[in-house]
Length: 330
Figure 1 (cartoon, helix red, strand yellow):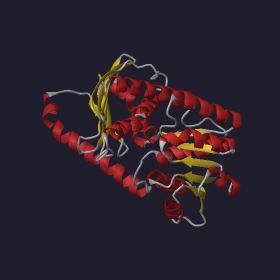
Figure 2 (cartoon, one colour):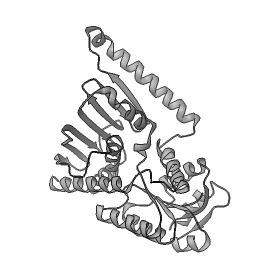
Figure 3 (cartoon, helix red, strand yellow):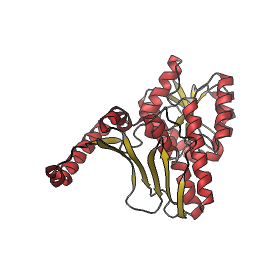
Figure 4 (cartoon, one colour):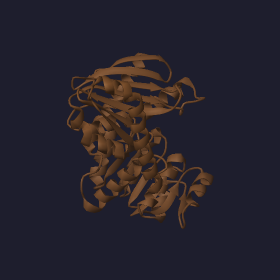
């Protein structure tokens, strides 16, 4: 599998690292900043540097191009790459609107190519474990998603809200991974947006109370989801990629020991997770290797993309509706 990377920043580095771990042959780096492109290309032997998509395809014929550039460039770059005959891996969000996402899939179908939006949270081992454990917690009665990010430190008010918009695909992709048959496209949000980068939102998801909290100022950094059922609870830690299952048995004895038993449980699972990630050389962005591996395989096998078109569009619609509601509460 020959691949190229467009965008030589942080995510471009992680895409290149992960793709090479999967056995892909990196043939080119594209970036308008030649210094950044050459610095990334130096991490592997024989990787050429280009300043444009045209220059890349004039010299190489990559099977897959990874787009790791800012959102406003995604649609144009992806259309150019698809028309040149390569498959697409594109950092989230895939495009700025659901209409643009639909357009990209139309271009992909016209050219017989596939698209992979990078929703790596949904492909973490913790989310895969959560799918197996959903039945053990009984009927869901509450879902809470929390993001406390240091990614907006020192940024302007507009930039802080932009970070919220940037991370929104994560909760929606996880929800479609856990409940693929339940629509997220038309949720009726009640929202609080008291200041830039601080958003609280609530709605009913298939009759279950759902809350999402985004804070670009709160410390320490956290990204997690709790799914509470009438027979237990699941806690997913997305920064570290693991899932904890808390059975719902209640007794006076359990109430006394749960601060200790829960802490030991979390330490044990987090420890196993860390050892596993070190062994498999996955120091950051857990889930990215699973996602890219699944996408490369679907190209080779001619099977459906790991993130199907319908779910990708639904996630874009949910993000668009959420952002529209945010604007009314600024």
